Image 1 (spheres, helix red, strand yellow):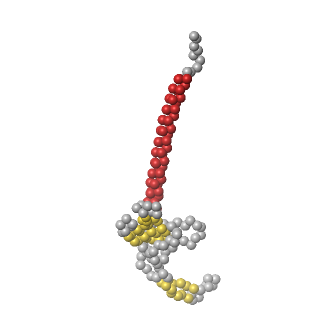
Image 2 (image 1 turned 180 degrees about the horizontal axis):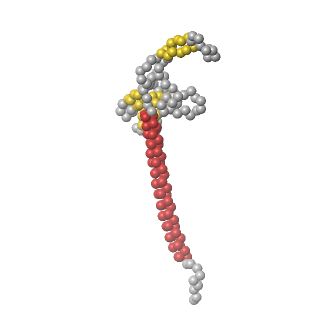
Image 3 (image 1 turned 135 degrees about the vertical axis):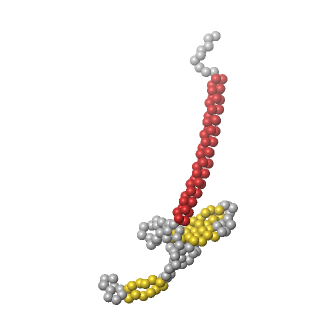
Length: 172
């Protein structure tokens, strides 16, 4: 009997398919593990980046914190017609409430807070009647999902007045 060597036997094809299948399972398993590790590292890096941004903002706010020295609450205001040269301007004295500058730290165990006035306010809307002065509060508040986890929350009011309360009414 003459046998030709032009093809593969069924057994050779089955062995080749089994080796290729085993190799593909190993490649898929390795790729899956690498993608899972990449996702875990990206989540960790995002958490670290968020922490760095928060600490940078806290540092910027604290380096620009200020206190106003003692001064007069009276202001002299001159009235007259701005188009005419004043011959005898009328001057009255009125009481203007002086904004209070403060720096208050409160030890609350796991829920500390810090309130202060700072020059770190940024205007995001053109021509708004805001200055770079603001009342800022940092506080630890429990998470809505898990009350054992605390979040560092920053609140900002871009107007100084004579109160130290910082109630944003939805503004943060």
